Image (cartoon, rainbow, N blue to C red; front, side, top):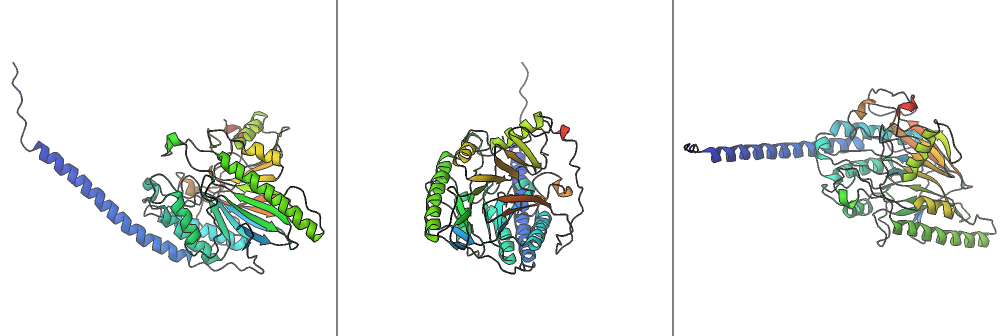
Length: 427
């Protein structure tokens, strides 16, 4: 028989020491990282406060209507800037890139002087291994400080990264921050409690006779499905049915109200008010439209008219919700919504007319989330949307690297990717 080897004394103690050292090192990293984050975020807040207020000649000031929704009254076109995927990390690992994002946002808003800015999700990016923090309110505070300093009216919808499952603050808490923190220019509203999501809201546009010329719906497109609550598998959620029902019901109410106002004023108003929608995660129809266009040799079809842009996301192309919803079909049936604006896929910047509804990706701001994206420039910018008094609209993608966007701090040097060789983008 082989003799059993005797265990050397102290083996367990050594293992405990190693574990203890590892814990101590991690604790030191957290403490040091947290301290640097606080100091760095104060510096970026100071930077946000260094920008001058936007020089408006006659700034439109929204007021709440009888339904409690913010309303712009004007007989001219309403100019809306769509920003998306700003991705401020708010932690010690992202401080420099956060400053670059602030510089870009301030430069574009200052030059364009929009009546309203709508951010279609992912203001924040509290992903620890890239930002160095789980504190998603830190990034929200920095961005909100900038917007108040610029003096521009704005609202937002949540993206999947704004409130990750591992973030400090859930959607309800973040919605409360945007609503109840005394932000002078933030128009965010949490929305009806009996409708899924936080931030389902309507902004109305009226002429001086009181008739509605445009409804702007801002919806919460949620984050991940229940079986992928961490988001690691990229199973994205869809717009929920009670949100679609709310859209249909509120549209019917505004249609009836508009007819009443028009009759009292002795003017003619369309039976159906025109509208546009803003949310983060694209509908499956974005994918359907692009694939149909691709399969037709990048040529228009009976259903698809290419307006501008490409899908630059590589093999997956469109990261839409994985389930089914009938929002697009409802929009078609009701005949109100002419356009949908989303974000989420940072390298997609196309705009397609699909079965009579314009589906558009906003240009992203992101310097942080996609590895190496801070070195690239073709995708970075904003989307300028004009809503005319007759209910029509147009939108134009604007590159941040144009000379008209004069930044207070030096712009970074980037590579402008060639938007050619569409054949390389296969689905």
